[in-house]
Length: 200
View (spheres, helix red, strand yellow):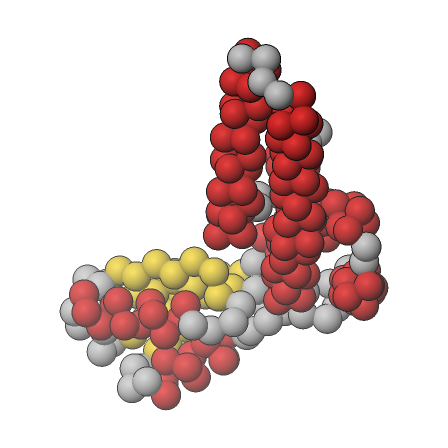
């Protein structure tokens, strides 16, 4: 399996690399034209050297900029997903410690390792998710429902928010390792709402 199938590289990180590769492509086309015309051997050799140098720079950009920054992003995502008792915290901490000193050719292995950890955490989190349904008597309009949704989305540990304005109900899917029912209700109360656990 190719790495690109395992980890999606952020487009903002690959833009400079793609521009450089397009430039190299132009140099290669120029080299092909020179060969067709049987140009000066010295000029052909110089063009070969330029293409080779361009590839070396592109490879360095791929490893040091794209891969290293992608790994940093994945480490941050894993840290955010793991509350400290997820069973993977030691592995994440080890990769985080190693990160500043990783050589360029160790990056791909660590990217695969952290992605595997992150996928495990995502699956484990989904299995542990809980749902609470709240009745909010003063949720009287669609604007109120949207504001409540925004408040809940800002809470760390909430995932899916569903509102039913007519019934004045809000359903919240959350990770109990990161937030509890009381904290969800408190956040809404502080914003002026009157949440009560609904009996379904």
